[in-house]
Length: 437
Ligand code: IMP
Image (cartoon, rainbow, N blue to C red; front, side):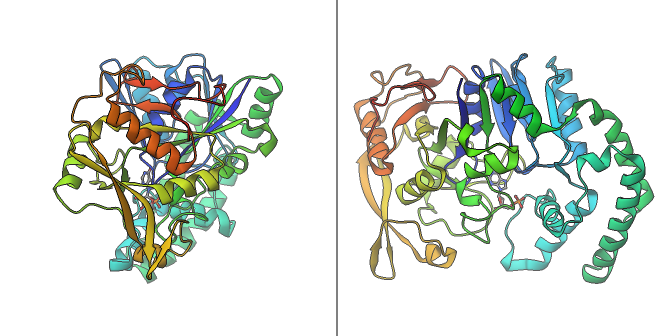
């Protein structure tokens, strides 16, 4: 058995959905440990495309149990829409479980998220507007409503009446908005509770049972390392901990049960929302990468900002997450380029810096120092082995492995399951491989 964490090594949208889908094949349990429906995974199976926000991609495998754990925040309306959509497509959700201790996103969280962003004007974070930050804020404030509250009609009504009374003061006095109707919301959420009830469990206990039964568990991170509340580009971050350490807290397991940590990184870099991005391209090449890579957010449809691969970020992700190996995605997007740049260090206030600056303002002043590598100018999307890759593509990957000091175990060359090269088994693989530093 092996328990594996899969995390995003950049700013999210690295293609974790496809990698977790691939690894879910040998997983008995897939656990989503943080975030909410700010995330979005696109999984392509044959000619069908699945867009999931809350439900782990493991749901596509009939025997895999999928757990939305305690560290997540759940918008029941969105979750039930996903359940319905999957059922219409003939995919069972009987194996979906949700933690009774996860927090619930309420209509006032969505309204407050959008209102506060509007008020911040040029200081806005560029959130997804899904109410994620305010849900986590209520959790820390200890006034949140959890799934367990949703399961108790009386407790829900009492808690919601009080919460909405408080939120309405803020909505009216601070944002000049209409108050919300508590009774209508109580009624709406009562309906969700009835539908969610069969899926509600003590998630930590369920995961512990799986550990004791020596079943394979895949912990699926949402967003990415640089969006981490503690270790990302604060304040331009999300409100949870997507890094590998977040898996233990969010799922309710001890660190000793984790065997491997896999980081997913694009062969270039993208970011949505505001905040510094040293290798961002504002030219034709950036637009070309965005077009070829279909770089639009799964959740909001926003255009993603595109740039070169950043080795400083890569090394940082290895350090913060303790990565064992990397899965490099979307290599095929670079197929047409004459040359490809990779950032190896920053020039910061006249000094060469190789480590990620923890102050986002310093990070904002960082000027990338690039190494230029030749492009391969041929299609890679049909390559099935490392040997079939053009020499320049192999050298590019080897360069990334050397720069990050981390082996590349998986290469993804397109959206479909078949467009993947497994360089070495990312979970049980040998310690020496082709694309090793
Ligand atoms: P929030 O998570 O909606 O509060 O948004 C905070 C920041 O995280 C914004 O910059 C969002 O664009 C970004 N973000 C949240 N979820 C994702 C994701 O799944 N992929 C990429 N960026 C995300």
